[in-house]
Image (cartoon, helix red, strand yellow):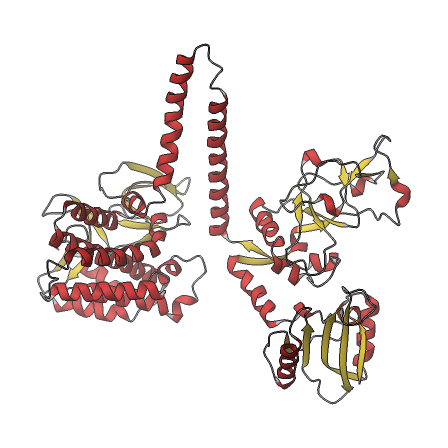
Length: 628
């Protein structure tokens, strides 16, 4: 049997529609629901009808196929797409799909509700940190119905009259329109009054509106006011943090939010809105929001300072005083902006914010290239690439060890160390990072774990290809297949471009402090450790000693630590150690290079100097982490 009905019979969540669907399901199985807009002549073109194809109820309930015919589509293409859907046993076509997980008969069959593509995007929202429903964050505020509550309408002059915030008053830029001649006023109960911080959304949308919800947050300047039935008012719970609410509002303004809440409807369902899943930020994303908010406020302060300075040009008694004041005051502001602008330059970021071993090698490459010593410059560029991979690999090994995840590439590194003749090099570090990028075991780590950032370093095709080219150049250089002097300039530029590609992908290192802990004092009463440390970020090892407190009493004085973007500390010993170099007397970072019978040899990431570690604790530590 085929029936043609208004789409509301299949879409609406009202009790009457759910009851009808339930009654039909007692005797009929629904095979296909086909939605069409403006399909009937002499009916308003925005009306949507549904053609449902039913079969007498059998022993097993068949899959439902849902299709929508879009206005303006080519009729022949739509017919072919519909025919392909009828032959499908699952999946999705261009305008339709198969519902394999059968919903209860009372549940709405709105097109977007069961669309596999939409459901996949819905599940993906959890990647922000978590999911909540909008109802978990906000309660609805009572509204005024202009028809049922017509007796409450007043004029602006009457005592106790408050503004009625209609849907048209809610602007797409997140603000509420000022008062206008057609603004309505009502005498509203106290329970209906809006408060600062409430959210108001338009409840009505045009057919085919591609935007998300139009939502604004109420301020003191917008009050007193109430919401009519053409808007939805939401009051955030008192315990909802601003960052959680901010992300929810940002999501409400996306087309996906409209889709998940019933984007094909002209009127927003309050119940669907309350059940709408909204992403919630984890700790790292919350901190990023706080940092961005602080940065925006600081930039706004600078802008206000510049505006105030420009507007005061003619306020001094003499032109000479004005000139001097504008130049002096403007200099400080200009220097701030210039310093901030330098962060857009990758080289400046690497030299000032990357860990010392990489920043030092990058600075040397730039210096050699600018000096015109081509052979030295070429070698410095390749050294920078190797140290970048070496340092990041050591972090990966330390983090994997801490997480209890074994890496197969450790075996090759261990064999090189035990061989005693030549230590691990470019290819070994690349193998570690490649395994980290593809390891299934590491995928199960929490989303905020720093290893996920390292996983992305060689995950892209561009970085993988750049790494491969640099590896080949490094191998040729080591086996005396030197680049001809005529080809050196282009070889340097090409190699440096590949290094730049890798460094660009490794920008996360700018947020990961390399700390040398110099002193730890544990206070047993306060259960707090007072820690003195040096943050070795930038291209020079001479940095001031700073202090911090830590709830952990297992920090080691003299060891290196990674401080990740969540400010958690990760011990890097024995993968990386820091001390004064016996060869050049400069503080340096070392990794294990070889372990011959005579002892453990450490190699500097900055200078390549090698020395034998006299401490008997080092072999034991290497055995503990599986490198010996």
